[in-house]
Length: 224
Length: 211
Image (cartoon, helix red, strand yellow):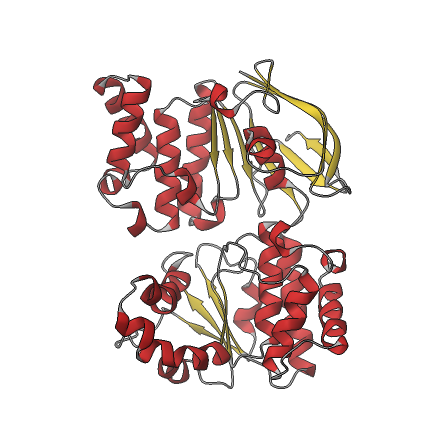
């Protein structure tokens, strides 16, 4: 698993939001993405996940993003299924295709032809970090609070065996103790070879390297 | 709802409300102000709830934690100017309203957004613009669910600086009701010791569901 961004420039209008971003991530890396409001954190995640340019477009887009040497910007999003997991902090319903987690699990099983044993194994692994998962299984999505939806959606991607996880500022929804569980979960994903990028506005997390978006540039800061 | 606000949040102070979780205040308001309309029940759409809505709209400003863009005009400054004009009973925003809108944006270093289509704002920018729209409505109560969500540390500071400055100059000044979570108080810690802020240990109960 390798994510490679080359000379990426993007602008919603002619003015670039960020320009000439070049960086690379290999498997097991965990990155916190920071920057001022409006610096382009969410947009960068949308580009990596292919939501831009396949679902919305800006006027300015040059450069390339490769996942395992395949262009995210050129190839259709379906060709990256189920590699990329994009978990937004808002409008989660857009990503939830059925009415409950149980239905999502059945759908995933049928699409990926996954065995019941595999589903159970993934469920138990995920529950180690989020014990509330079993309570969410039959709860309709429309009755769930946003933090439950985030857990549910993350589990769906985990079940699908995604390799690149993009969390767009989901942390502020959770209490500090739960946030620590999320960091443990990121480390678990890393130990399984996955890449994780999460948007973080507050309290820099010491153990993870940081990408900082400022003045249209991306700065990479490695932790001690 | 209005009685609930009047009873629990007297207008001589600002309030820090301790939440069980960071969405509590938000969900509470959502349940009372938005869901009745989603239910589609005649009683809610045409009855008492709908009749009282304009009243609560004037009295209450609400900045949710995260929000989808719900803007009606094509530029950010127009959006703020229109809200200001409406609060002053103008049918259309005037040059002066636009001037005030631009001035407010400059206080958050967001003047570059003045001509931007609000639909293309980031989540954090949307939240600040929505805060300003609520502010210019001059509500009696301004409820902010959980300020740091979607906002950078700098923008949280900007909001506090803005509120502090306005407190000295603005009349009327709304009652600010800020939700916080005991896990994380670094962003609002200094308010605990201020006389004009009162800590409410838990969200007061609302017995009746009418708004």
